[in-house]
Length: 71
Image 1 (cartoon, one colour):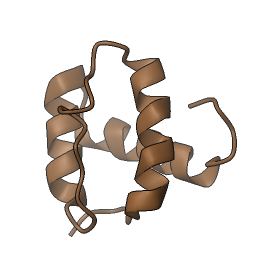
Image 2 (tube, helix red, strand yellow):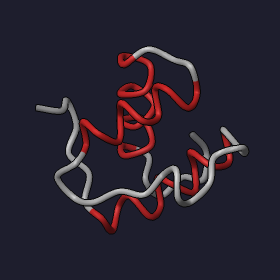
Image 3 (cartoon, helix red, strand yellow):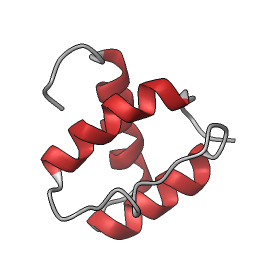
């Protein structure tokens, strides 16, 4: 089970933040279906060459500050 839960609505906003931070990532690479957080985390880990803790921390930070444009 993933350490984070992301709704499809929240993901649209978080995805924009992730793409700003990692501008080489495409919409296809960041495709997400609600409930598939583990798959998303694993994919992002591979794409940005970071460990799971870093990716989870980054996503949680984006989720907590959902109304802020910064990541």
